[in-house]
Image 1 (tube, rainbow, N blue to C red):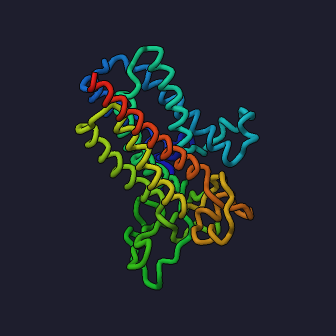
Image 2: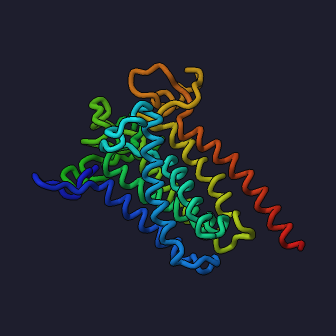
Image 3: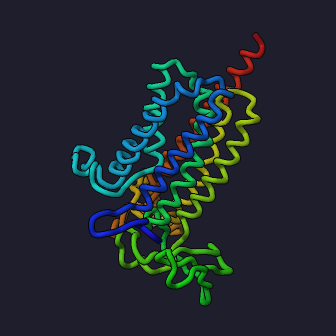
Length: 305
């Protein structure tokens, strides 16, 4: 919708980068503000923030390359090329880095995970606005009916349009640029996957932040995040149309119902099925179930002593 906040002959300020930086900042501030109430010295979290940022960025880039260009994992130039981040890769990379630093500095892991879970999902909600501005992570082409209503002025700040309609999905996005440079979908109504993701992230993150105030055992908030957030991701992935890689191939009779499953392997590919993010989401839900059972029983044993 507006890839650059500033673009001159000598400098460019990408909206995506600015919004992702704001998302990281908001997440760290939320964790920092609550740390002392969780029994963690806030100043001890500074190396955790650094580890989360570096590990998250590396993990996000690594999963993107693994999904769409596996050979690029061994190519330094592919790592440095512009564009291409995978949210779940950022979660896994950031998690690995956080665990390492937390163990080294003796920060308790379960309270730290509970602190981080709402901040992580809220950061996703903010970060997806960067995807909206850049035109990445877009949806598939959608039929909005004969008379959709344009929400944005034709010559406004945003280079595109939001269409309203009385039929599903009720609103759609249209980009004059972005969409990976795919001309066949630029300038056409698309499922609003970036805005869906943003709404889901802000909503789930807000609910987790409220749950943190009422948690009954350490690990409850993190387990809830692992169980709930992937539900929205798996559903939204079914309507995306960018190249995300296929983790589990499925029959065409199933994938044809959802454009996000039939287009995940890239344009011109006959492979269709669950995307890498959907597969990771399912694994996260299994992990969340295990964490809930283990952490709740651990709390019961501690209370009984």
